[in-house]
Picture (cartoon, rainbow, N blue to C red):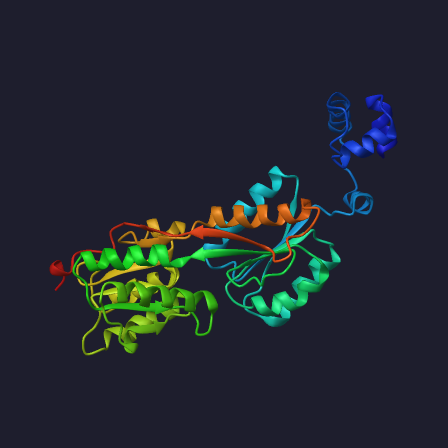
Amino acid sequence: MDIRDIAKHAKVSIATVSRTINRVPTVDPALAKRVWKAIDELGYYPNTQARTLVSGKSRIFGLIISDVTNPFFPGIVQAFEEIAIQYDYEILLTSTVYDQQRMENAVRRMIERQVDGVAIVTFGMEEALLEHLRFRKLPLVFIDVGPPLPLVSNIRIQYQIGIRQAVQHLASLGHRRIAFVSGPPGLKSGDARILAFQNAMAEKNLEVPGAMIVSGHHSIEGGLAAFEQLAALPERPSAVMCSNDISAIGVMRKAYELGIQVPRDLSVIGFDDIRLAQFVIPPLTSIRMSQSELARLAFHALLADVERATPQPKGTEYFLTTELVLRNSTAPFESQT
């Protein structure tokens, strides 16, 4: 079956069928309705490769994430895909797992599939990804680290808003010894969170000794090791803020192993507000960085560049705010023993 059969069944021209399938906006709505009705009745599936050749667009967006096993990323993937379906786009997904060779293979596959743009929703390896993609004249979306170039969009996370709220919350509860469990050393987004924490502590005239900032590598195991280190200090912290929720869960588990009760003996705050944060015991107070909003910004940034006749000379910036979500993992310092 081909478009000639569709044209005959719908009693329209072959050109009308072709334009309808390729979603040319000038097609008469009544004729387009007849074409789609014929397609449905005959069970016809358009040849997407042929459509790509005709339109010059694959209607596929690449989506690169860091680690599909991290609960933060599936929420982004689901939201991105739901929006893509609404706009008749497909997604080509890959997880780098922080592996250079795997990342290069994924980029090659996306270029071979002639994707219309790539959203790089990772926290690490962005510079290597940029070097592989920047000369392809593809719309690109980065988190925080996008350079001011045409066809490059940059989503800037306003870490300082939510982190300031978290520090103010802990300070209002009487906490003074507040530690921070950071991400992997050298990770730009992780460094931004550390800086936001230090600035917020300075605003409250609270000191941050070097020993109170420990890397948790954004993993449960890292959170376990980080709190073991913090708990061994001569004066352990009364509260711990973490660079993501997964490391915060690791902190809470290590506290349990050491007989330290959360929140009676230790207040804990995470970052990201993954769905799991609501269901750990006690439910985790966290700084929300909306996965669905991040996915929405990334998709529409790509779509805008695809549809834009002339690229912005220095790319486009978007902003994503953060906010504190209170649950039961924090308590006043006075109630802690």
